[in-house]
Length: 375
Length: 255
Image (cartoon, rainbow over all chains, first blue to last red; front, side):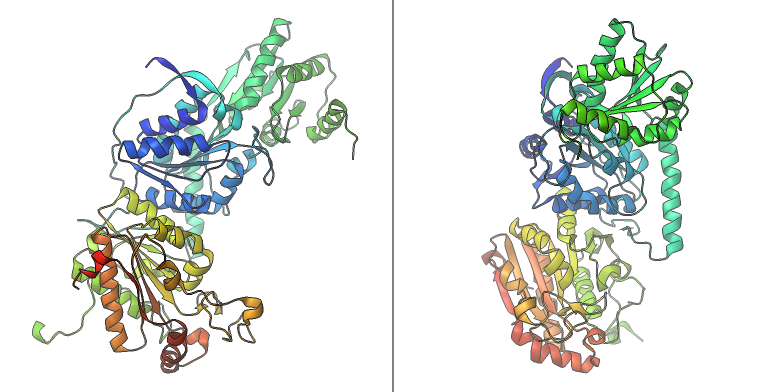
């Protein structure tokens, strides 16, 4: 396929259609509404299901219903809407059925704003809904990657009977970039042995998340963990940039990772041995790759558009062996590459030490940088 | 015994599982009517049920059809998801008054407004049964429940919601009726209404719902017989029986 100019949100919508999406249920919210708008036109054109639901609660439960039949189904929203979907998400997880959910993240908490943010990392990666359940979370950093990961998300969801979330910030959703779209194929209904699609010539089936006997629920929880171990062993994805001889390693996902790459390139031109690890699957997180870098790195810098959420996963991996520094822009602010370059200079000229919580020194620097009084 | 003498047997749409409902509760009657209708229409193998949260949470144990189990109040949304991808299947929800008329009010109103081709069996027993008899949106004024212990005070706890009347104003609704399960005559009328509701769905004539006035002897603190009297004497005046919406196309259906 030739490259075309695609807007992130519309690219995700079309990639889902081409991956065999049979039903979409959603609700308008900035900055993801283009996915809903695009599919309101595209799905009926192909004779596939589209419903603009009465709320995100309605949308996720329509997803739940359609997912029970074994078809490829998706919803999308942005941060406040995703919070509303957490109930349904927990039920889908508890029922162990595949579904895809896209979160085009915006600044929060609360109503926040509609600017790009990465502050739903913990909600996505740690669970968000009630109960103990794993989920796959993919974090694209470009429109092309958004297309590729949308395609992948349906395969992963079906393979592991697990929720697959795609988290991107509003800027990737809104920006236009040249990208290669996948080929359109007719949806092929797989005859899953668990799908509730009418008991014709077979025993009837029940799909639920109820295990009234705690021992059954415990077994279910353990089965989910076992399944998750397979995901961890087989599905970790990340991208490495300039890491072969890197003394300083930046870790950043999505747009923060992309901005960090510009800073890394400039620092390299200045002769600083710095590289970047960009997790693509933030869940399962690339612990092993990061662990290996710990023997080579003199310091890590975690760059995020939040107050330090993936930072905890990095701290957990590095375990105090090497200093970990943090630079974040929360609230819907996208860092400029020179801000991260300044951080690289600061770390390269040293000294940096191992800190219990790198957020504390970052906070002090932030108040200085922003020239606001410390409350 | 020859088959000529057989006047009563388990519907094929039922499993062998005995129900967990309290003695005197009319859930079992409502279940049976739905099962008989599925049998008579020959649609058991193409039916997918959506169970609620509430006393009927285990409805899937009793019906021998595919079943899914919805979060509290969300059954109409789940049913929408199933029906939209499998339009040739029969999809019904079975919901109580806490589920449908309180936490799930958004889902039921919009499923009805969209004219979703689903059938809703709505059990109105004027309280939250499963959690131990708290006040529901349908609790009668002055009625004592575990969360309206001096009787429902409309000044502070509001008025009952008449769901059938309300939904009947929506264009998407093909069929909407209220029936009662307090005596054999009314049970027969309820079955006819349930049949009409499923016929509405298989003909693609829009959203269909049957509200069934039901008993809850345990939480009402009454004997089963007194509970039936309560339905007749107190519930029916507050929730009049009747057909609240029958579209012209549905009037032609003979059941």
